[in-house]
Structures are given as C-alpha cells and as structure tokens.
Image 1 (cartoon, helix red, strand yellow):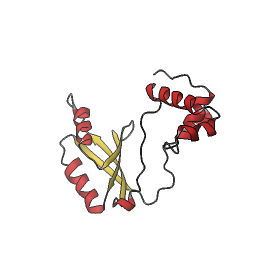
Image 2 (cartoon, one colour; image 1 turned 30 degrees about the vertical axis):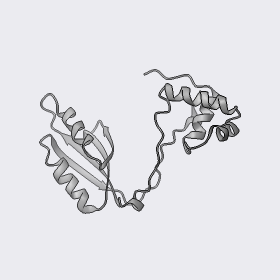
Image 3 (cartoon, helix red, strand yellow; image 1 turned 60 degrees about the vertical axis):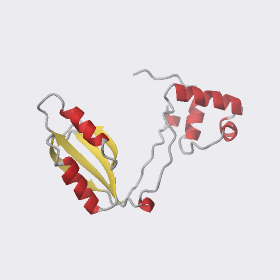
Image 4 (cartoon, one colour; image 1 turned 60 degrees about the horizontal axis):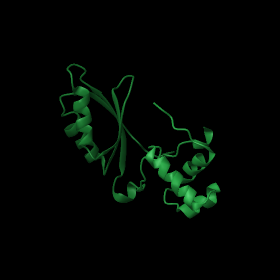
Length: 158
C-alpha cells in the first residue's frame, strides 16, 4: 500500500481537523499558520488523495435510544467457496453492526453492535447470526462503560 507524502502543514491540518471537522478554512488558517486559500487547497488535495475519507457527526448512542453495545466474536463455516462473502452480505444487511473486522485467532470475525436493549441483542444474535447456516459459533460481551473511544489518529507521532 502506497503512503502519501505529507509535509508539516498537511500534518497540522489533519491534527486540527480530526477532532473537529467543522472548522472553517479561516479557523484552520489560524491554527496551522497558512492562509485560508492554502488551507482550502491542501484540504482538497488530502480529500482527493483519500487521506481524508469523509466527514461524520458522532451521535450520542444512549440519548438516541441505543442503550446496549456489544462485542460479538463469530466463527463461520470454512468449507465451501463463498462463506466469507455470504457473511459479509449478512453483515451489510444489518444496521446494528457498527464495525466488523476479519480476524486471526479463535474467531473469524469481530463485530461491534449497538441495539436498544438486551431483547434486541438476543434477537440479533439468534435471528440474524445463529439462524445463518454459515455461522458456527458466537461469543458476546456486553460493554458496561466506554473508557476511551476515538477515531483521532496520532498524526503528531509520525
């Protein structure tokens, strides 16, 4: 995978935008010591290079009715040609899955799921996962307290 060359100003822009992508070009200019037009050009370049993938709003899960977050480890049937593709399709059809990772180790996949309550979690696991012929085993952990959750990369360490 090719890594784009970033200079100090690019790094400053990324460092400023990660926690607050709503900063205006004028506000960015003040933080990174460039003109607003230079900030605009550089941000556009970072977007075109795919370094800035998208902008998002983080919504409070509990305040919107999603009171249960769970980590679910999933093993799938390894025989046959397409179980991984079938599993990806199964996950793509589920809004409850926030994140899904293919893993090495005891399980094949790691899911982060949000649902309104324990009944919804049980229904998701029983109807969506265990009802699938390719899912052979699941293990779940309900998250009690979020200690740290961030999407901010340690840009300043590069």
